[in-house]
Image 1: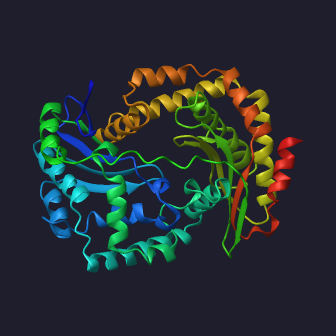
Image 2: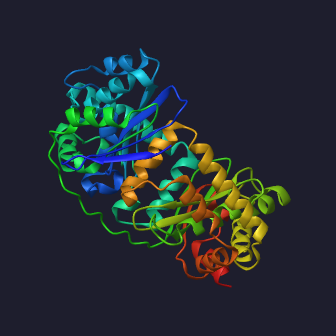
Image 3: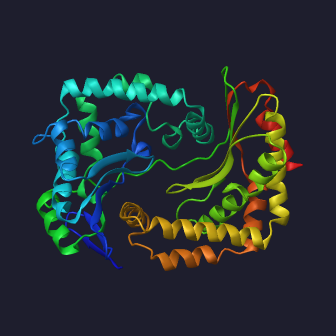
Length: 420
């Protein structure tokens, strides 16, 4: 399987990979525009726009968009992240041209009917309310805000209800005009696809567009801080954050190996010590997330009000201990988990298409699976221990708590325990 990349004169990048033996394909448009590209007064508009793409175009009603894809047994969806927005579909090989036509239509020709704007506004306000009622979801937005206060990277993707309530048609068209240019788009397709045919179709659909130019991101400023929200819940939801590497950082894979060994599965240190040995929680895990110029190491757990002090203290102690004696066997197991996850994900055309789009956005090329697994395999014990030591010794910690938080230690107390 070989990736092929073509860039049109207007900047649209088209990347494909044919996967022999498959009868279906995943195809979509990934835009390098997400929540982080919004100005303060636009917070939530990228996500609102994603919703509106499915509410009708100049050529199709909302029902027709759904019917045309589902009539051929396919599905269509979208998502908004802090740095990207994606519109994609999965269809059989013969229906790839149809899927590309529908996706191009919803991206380039949204109707923004005022009545549909009001309907979808209500849907998004319900989504915001649902997030607030989902503690193990909203806690990560609050941790992000605590870590990156007063900046685009710290704001929520959904946006605040008061902003969403005020958006109008002009706000949507302004964001499209600023960011939905061909030079900010990546057309990615994997599975039963023909590169030359997709390039021809893309030229017809997107070739007339003019570039909009790349908008500079507001540089990330890690601050670290605390947010605790008291609510009568069954559990305290606890999220601890540390500044991590960005997507191009030399520590990118080291951070992933470290967090996998620390809290990435049932055999990890946090799971074994805090759940299996002490029974302090049902769920606990660690993960590494990366952005263009920064990242975050996150540890999450939910526990009772009576046990939050023990859980948070043990979490700090395990992080300190990991910086001293994490074994080669633990690190090898983490590398194996990561490689298996990568290779299993590449068996899906949807996973492969998304990976290609992200690689093009980051590096301008697609890293082969062999290259990626080699980088994972190159992460040794000394690198992991060095990273772990720097994490507990120099990072400014962020903390978010939600629920009956009265017995939870303050951020300064956790920082003190880290430094002790």
